[in-house]
Length: 497
Image 1 (cartoon, helix red, strand yellow):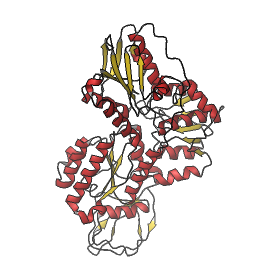
Image 2: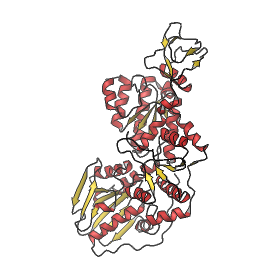
Image 3: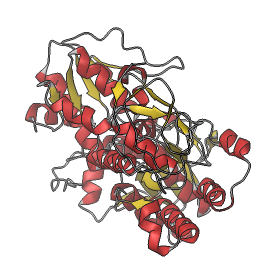
Image 4: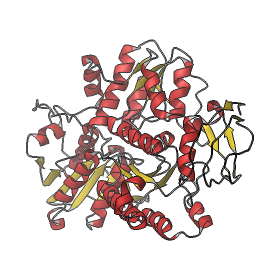
């Protein structure tokens, strides 16, 4: 705590809500205690930040306390911290298009395919016939722009700093094979194994990579102050979401984040918010909206969202002004539904004329996730035309789980594998995951005779992973299969957003 002499001259508090006054105090790095109330108007004389004063003619006491920035990491100004990284001379946030790194990614199979089966399928209208097996590749699949960019920047960091120690503050993306390749490049991945991340081994002069999901404000400040070289691979779409929650804070709005509270991206996004609540689906959003309109059991509310709200969250005072943000890997359609639900709720409670005072909506939805989902809906439009689906992607990948979910809801046998290692060719057996987390082992999954297979992959999945899975499928169908010969194909049209 700090002893700070203050002078607030002639601040009118008539008709000013408590949350608005909190916003004024926040700009001076002060915090209004939760027990304070405000009535009437006041002209405030100098006072000490740690004591109560009679601010109003009605003698209403407003207790104000100043708190040192280092003691309130959750209240760091995210945008200011991000801008300060540029001023260090130790910060990079764009790829350098190094040809050596690109060649090594090709060699390691962690980039776009240029000569393999997937590349050849692209040249053949996303179709392939191998013996009795017909394969249909979804029109949108695999690596999105932000993921490929992040992996490329990690490879470039190794080339640029060959003699330095490199660390990533989490998995670069949700793909086990890509992360293993980075470990083989002697890049250390710091993960939370239940006791928090241990950064004690990172010293000034080392290189720290922020993953595609981003890093928290607290991590950014820590490494800025530590004097390390920072490589920021955060997807620009994720950074766009951060800008939106920063806008919410400036407008004294609570950020309603559509996401999973434990997902790395949502953890980072929440760190940029002032007040927030995280809803994982439309059902939870409806619960919040019902509470906004009708009130309810506060204890039940806090129990339901105990791990998904900001420190000191109060649903009775912090839901009168809200803004929507999203985890970029969530269902685009569901995020849009939640946005419409919040808008309708605020309009009903405050009226159309005051809607903009109580609800903020900024366009932050990433199209890549939705494009892969739409492509899967298209390929499964006629369930009778496909015998089974294969979904390739990390088992901890949120966007991949939604692809599996779509196939399951269509009633099509669907097998989600994170790599070809899950397939036993000799026993015709596959170890796979269902959309809601169950791990399952299925035997005789590739039937004898003509078979049509649909295949897609999550946004963190390189083309090589799909090719290796199909190699094993072809081998099950034909024990004499020797592999697909490489062939130069048309260059991949790399998306720019």
